[in-house]
Structure formats: C-alpha cells, structure tokens
Image (cartoon, rainbow, N blue to C red; front, top):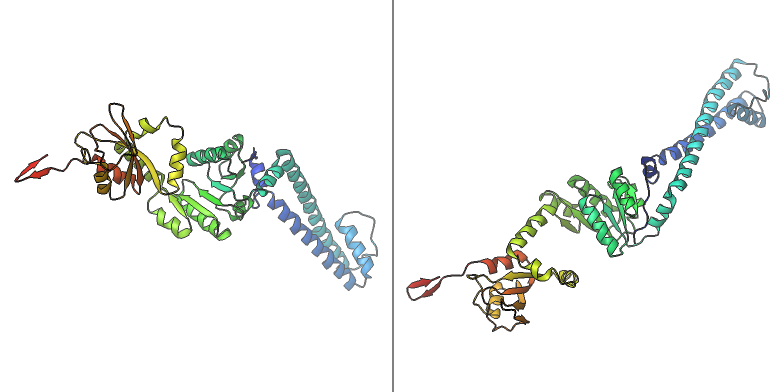
Length: 373
C-alpha cells in the first residue's frame, strides 16, 4: 500500500529529482575537485620546470592554494616564478573557496533530506515492485489514487504542481514532485520495476511524451494514457500506450447510457455485490444493464428467445421483474416480454446498441394490404 509522502517545500521536491537542486551541488563539488586537482598538477609542473625538486614544488603549491602562509619553500626570485605563483594563488584559492561552498551545500541538503524524511520516502519507493505510477494528481489522478488505496495496490504519484503534490502527501500517498516527462523522474519513481503507468495529465502532448519515455525505459510496462482530443488516441497508441481513455467520450457515453438504461441505477444501485459482479464481468468484456420494456417497444410482446436472436448476441436476458412484483430469474426462451417489465441484461459489446434495440419503436406488422402499428 502506498506509504507516506514527502516534500513540503520546493527544496524538498528537488532533492529527490536527480536533475534538481541536489544534483547541482554534487556536480559543482565534483567539478571543483577536478579543477583544484588540475591546478595542483599544472602548478607543480611549472615549479619543477623552474628547477625545483618535485617534493618542494608540490609542497609549495599545497601551501599556496590552501592559503596557509607558512612562507616560501624556496626564494621566488625570478619573473617567471612570481607570475606562476600569482596564477597559482588566484586559480587555486578561488577553487578552494568554491570547493568549500559546495561541500557546505551538499552537507546542508543531505541534512534537509533527513529532516524532511526524504531518504525514508525514497527507500519506500525503492522497495516497491510491480507497482503503478500515476502521472498527474488532477481529478482523475485523485480518484485513481483513492481506488488503488482501497484495493491495497502500491503506487507512486508524480505531480509537477507543488500544491497538488502537497495534497497527495497529506492524503498519505508516496509522491514525487517533478516532471513526469523527465526520464530521471520516472527512474526515481521505479519505472523499471513498475507494472502499470497511468498517464492522466490534462495535456495530450505531455502524455504522448511520457508514454514514449516510459516505453523506452520499460518495454514490459502496461501504459494506460488519457487523451483529451479524439485525434490524440492514435498518437498515444503509436507512442506505445496499451490502452487509451478519452474522458470526454466516456462522459458522453455514460449520459447516453442513463438515457437508454434509466432503470439500471434503481434496480442495481442497492445491491452490494453488483460492483464486484460488474468488475468480474468486465474482465470478460461483459456488463450488467437494466432496461424497461416500453408500451410500444420493439421487443415488447416478443419472447426471450426472439429478443436475444434479434440482438444477434449483443445481450442475454437473465432476469425479468414484472410490475406486479413477480421476478423471473433465468427466464426460458418462451417467456414473453410484457409492457413495464424490468429486464436485467448481460451485455456483450456495445451497451448502447443493446439499449437502442429495446428503445426502438415497434415495427408495423403487415396483414394483407394493411399495416397495423
């Protein structure tokens, strides 16, 4: 399960980002060490070229760049030695000042890491395996995090906005404040060990870029990406997404379902096991819906067998509740659908097409030369 989050300040967030503030002092420290070492070697060579023994030359350079001031090892009695010593002082002492500052920065920032609990947070992330990465803590990311927490599935939230990252931390989620488009951030979140990556940012370009990066870092990870524009769907699939979710399309489809299946909520809403049943059915590409047989509906008056044949495998009728209170479970093919019946369907494929069949008006029946509606 997701552990405690961290980062209550911008400083804290950058400490866990390999491209953030922590990396800068480390790069500065390593670069300054190389600089000081180069000055030491070159200055020593210069003194040896002036005829000094190697030991005296190295000792002289060491005293100079550390500004100890013990005195000159040998007389500086030539123009070359004076110029060489001046350059050694300027370059060496400047390097030592920068080196001291870099050491202080690194020490302070590692102290901050311990104070903010960032090391523990990173340790928690490093222990995760087969977890999920949630890129974005907006409306969809919040609901996804809640659902995964209830399911006790481990996950890490990656959020670039400080306020949203703090909200995720306050909720108790493992959270990285950083750009999910940055490969280093994905690596820090454990992309190479992750089972699923959910790209739910409201930015199609960012989701495409994250998908490309994640697929490159972990070819086996399952990528579920969000798309705002319908035209983005093909781009996300081309970038390596396994599944693409279009929230706008889903919202419109859900409203259409409520229009076509108005009885579903009232009939199934209070059944505690329905959620689990529907999830299990979804694994097989099936779903549960309830329709009402209208007074002049296309299938009203038809038998169950005739209705299922007309649906051409789109649905199966598993229960009929009559207006008088009678409930017929697993109705046979010869049971006739009556006006006002609540019909529980197991739907395969498009739920909208099943609803359209039941909501279509009756076809007029021809008797001789006459049509009877």
